[in-house]
Length: 277
Image (cartoon, rainbow, N blue to C red):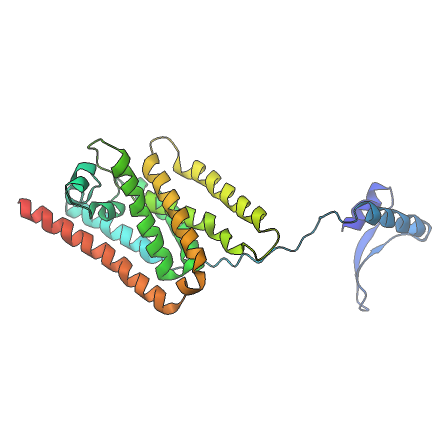
């Protein structure tokens, strides 16, 4: 195809055809244009010798884990439960309450959403990003890392924000998933001479997506940025032990810890709410 464009640029009519006799694909030109076509192609090859029009790239190795659907179902469960039982009073991320020892709010707030639009937005992007995170780092390991990083975003909110306004939503966890994906290219270090280029491209792409998705007006920028940075940190650690992190036993333990960190904070939150009645 490249040669055909070269010949067309020189006013030489050509056609690309497939030969059934085993010769494969080829260019057909008229007899009188044959020598001019050879000269043009030879000149093109000389002028573009060493020019990287085509390069072999590393196989990305991305897998999508449909287990992220279970995370969507959890979000929907808590959203429907909140419509019948007041979960916001014991579950919102309120800095003063965390300071007074109610650490579980760092986790419970992730499962609460203001309205259906808020839920749909986080569920849509979270389904895609967490599916890739779980496919890259392992089902249990990936979801636990994103969950802990999302809680880390709430820690940043707690440390920085002094207002009494309650924070809620899984967007910090979603941005954590973006951070985990942005930093996964560090696994290419020392595997290819082009590793710095791939790592830089991945990081820049992750930052650009964060600016697009996580910094729109009306969003909790501190929680988003905290989750993204925590995702970068957790992803950096996981790339150092990627072979271990993807083992079935490790993923099973990580999935168990994730379940514990969903159930126990809510048990503590609901028990604390009941003690005030």
